Image (cartoon, rainbow, N blue to C red; front, side, top):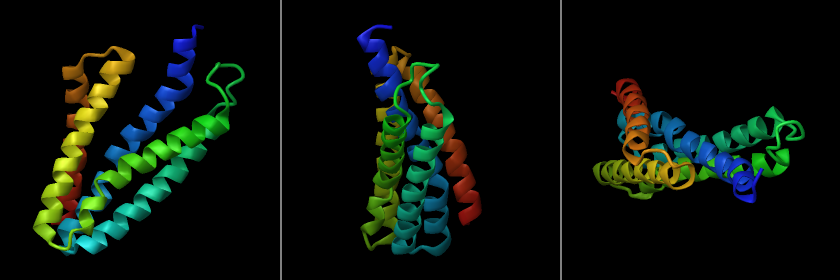
Length: 156
Protein backbone atom coordinates (compact mmCIF):
# COMPACT_ATOMS: atom_id res chain seq x y z
CA UNK A 1 0.00 0.00 0.00
CA UNK A 2 1.36 3.43 -0.91
CA UNK A 3 1.74 6.27 1.56
CA UNK A 4 -1.16 8.11 -0.08
CA UNK A 5 -3.41 5.06 0.19
CA UNK A 6 -2.47 4.63 3.85
CA UNK A 7 -3.24 8.30 4.52
CA UNK A 8 -6.62 7.97 2.80
CA UNK A 9 -7.50 4.77 4.65
CA UNK A 10 -6.26 5.74 8.11
CA UNK A 11 -6.94 9.49 8.23
CA UNK A 12 -9.17 10.86 5.48
CA UNK A 13 -11.75 8.06 5.46
CA UNK A 14 -12.37 8.19 9.25
CA UNK A 15 -12.57 12.00 9.10
CA UNK A 16 -15.00 11.93 6.20
CA UNK A 17 -17.11 9.26 7.90
CA UNK A 18 -17.34 11.46 10.97
CA UNK A 19 -18.13 14.62 9.02
CA UNK A 20 -20.84 12.91 7.00
CA UNK A 21 -22.39 11.30 10.06
CA UNK A 22 -22.24 14.48 12.12
CA UNK A 23 -23.59 16.66 9.35
CA UNK A 24 -26.49 14.35 8.53
CA UNK A 25 -27.46 12.59 11.77
CA UNK A 26 -27.77 15.77 13.80
CA UNK A 27 -30.09 17.59 11.39
CA UNK A 28 -33.28 15.90 12.64
CA UNK A 29 -32.92 16.51 16.38
CA UNK A 30 -31.77 20.11 15.97
CA UNK A 31 -34.32 21.21 13.40
CA UNK A 32 -37.24 19.26 14.88
CA UNK A 33 -36.66 20.93 18.26
CA UNK A 34 -36.33 24.32 16.58
CA UNK A 35 -39.51 23.85 14.55
CA UNK A 36 -41.46 22.45 17.49
CA UNK A 37 -40.46 25.00 20.13
CA UNK A 38 -39.58 28.08 18.04
CA UNK A 39 -36.86 28.53 20.66
CA UNK A 40 -33.36 28.90 19.21
CA UNK A 41 -31.76 28.27 22.61
CA UNK A 42 -33.59 24.94 22.97
CA UNK A 43 -32.38 23.93 19.50
CA UNK A 44 -28.84 24.98 20.45
CA UNK A 45 -28.90 22.81 23.59
CA UNK A 46 -30.36 19.85 21.66
CA UNK A 47 -27.80 20.30 18.87
CA UNK A 48 -24.85 20.63 21.21
CA UNK A 49 -25.88 17.55 23.20
CA UNK A 50 -26.45 15.62 19.97
CA UNK A 51 -23.10 16.67 18.47
CA UNK A 52 -21.20 15.72 21.63
CA UNK A 53 -23.00 12.39 22.09
CA UNK A 54 -22.72 11.51 18.39
CA UNK A 55 -19.01 12.34 18.45
CA UNK A 56 -18.42 10.09 21.46
CA UNK A 57 -20.55 7.32 19.98
CA UNK A 58 -18.80 7.42 16.61
CA UNK A 59 -15.36 7.55 18.26
CA UNK A 60 -16.10 4.38 20.20
CA UNK A 61 -17.79 2.71 17.24
CA UNK A 62 -14.85 3.34 14.94
CA UNK A 63 -12.26 2.50 17.56
CA UNK A 64 -13.92 -0.76 18.59
CA UNK A 65 -14.93 -1.91 15.10
CA UNK A 66 -11.46 -2.97 13.97
CA UNK A 67 -8.07 -3.37 15.64
CA UNK A 68 -6.45 -2.32 12.38
CA UNK A 69 -4.01 -5.22 12.47
CA UNK A 70 -5.67 -7.38 9.82
CA UNK A 71 -7.09 -4.61 7.66
CA UNK A 72 -4.28 -2.05 7.70
CA UNK A 73 -6.73 0.63 8.86
CA UNK A 74 -4.28 1.83 11.50
CA UNK A 75 -4.43 2.49 15.20
CA UNK A 76 -8.03 2.20 16.46
CA UNK A 77 -7.59 4.99 19.02
CA UNK A 78 -6.36 7.41 16.34
CA UNK A 79 -9.15 6.41 13.94
CA UNK A 80 -11.73 6.71 16.71
CA UNK A 81 -10.48 10.14 17.71
CA UNK A 82 -10.48 11.36 14.11
CA UNK A 83 -13.99 10.02 13.49
CA UNK A 84 -15.32 11.40 16.77
CA UNK A 85 -13.90 14.87 16.18
CA UNK A 86 -15.24 14.85 12.62
CA UNK A 87 -18.69 13.83 13.85
CA UNK A 88 -18.72 16.56 16.48
CA UNK A 89 -17.58 19.17 13.94
CA UNK A 90 -20.22 18.09 11.43
CA UNK A 91 -22.94 18.39 14.09
CA UNK A 92 -21.88 21.55 15.84
CA UNK A 93 -21.51 23.70 12.70
CA UNK A 94 -25.24 23.90 11.99
CA UNK A 95 -25.96 24.10 15.71
CA UNK A 96 -24.04 27.35 16.26
CA UNK A 97 -26.53 29.53 14.32
CA UNK A 98 -29.07 28.76 17.05
CA UNK A 99 -27.10 31.08 19.29
CA UNK A 100 -28.88 33.80 17.29
CA UNK A 101 -31.83 34.76 19.53
CA UNK A 102 -34.26 35.36 16.66
CA UNK A 103 -35.98 32.14 15.59
CA UNK A 104 -36.37 32.81 11.85
CA UNK A 105 -32.88 34.24 11.45
CA UNK A 106 -31.34 31.28 13.31
CA UNK A 107 -33.32 28.83 11.19
CA UNK A 108 -32.29 30.47 7.91
CA UNK A 109 -28.61 30.73 8.87
CA UNK A 110 -28.58 27.10 10.06
CA UNK A 111 -30.19 26.03 6.78
CA UNK A 112 -27.53 27.91 4.81
CA UNK A 113 -24.81 26.26 6.91
CA UNK A 114 -26.28 22.83 6.10
CA UNK A 115 -26.16 23.67 2.38
CA UNK A 116 -22.49 24.64 2.68
CA UNK A 117 -21.78 21.46 4.67
CA UNK A 118 -23.32 19.30 1.95
CA UNK A 119 -21.29 21.08 -0.73
CA UNK A 120 -18.12 20.65 1.36
CA UNK A 121 -18.81 16.93 1.82
CA UNK A 122 -19.26 16.47 -1.92
CA UNK A 123 -16.06 18.43 -2.55
CA UNK A 124 -14.10 16.31 -0.04
CA UNK A 125 -15.32 13.10 -1.68
CA UNK A 126 -14.32 14.49 -5.08
CA UNK A 127 -10.95 15.77 -3.84
CA UNK A 128 -9.77 12.70 -1.94
CA UNK A 129 -11.64 9.79 -3.53
CA UNK A 130 -12.02 11.05 -7.10
CA UNK A 131 -15.80 10.60 -7.07
CA UNK A 132 -18.04 12.70 -9.25
CA UNK A 133 -18.73 15.99 -7.49
CA UNK A 134 -22.25 16.14 -8.93
CA UNK A 135 -23.19 12.59 -7.91
CA UNK A 136 -21.63 13.08 -4.46
CA UNK A 137 -23.60 16.28 -4.02
CA UNK A 138 -26.72 14.44 -5.15
CA UNK A 139 -26.21 11.62 -2.65
CA UNK A 140 -25.56 13.84 0.37
CA UNK A 141 -28.32 16.25 -0.64
CA UNK A 142 -30.82 13.41 -0.97
CA UNK A 143 -29.86 12.16 2.49
CA UNK A 144 -30.12 15.69 3.89
CA UNK A 145 -33.54 16.17 2.30
CA UNK A 146 -34.89 12.89 3.69
CA UNK A 147 -33.58 13.74 7.17
CA UNK A 148 -34.89 17.30 6.82
CA UNK A 149 -38.33 15.95 5.94
CA UNK A 150 -38.26 13.74 9.02
CA UNK A 151 -37.31 16.66 11.26
CA UNK A 152 -39.95 18.91 9.69
CA UNK A 153 -42.60 16.22 10.13
CA UNK A 154 -41.68 15.66 13.78
CA UNK A 155 -41.31 19.34 14.53
CA UNK A 156 -44.59 20.60 13.12
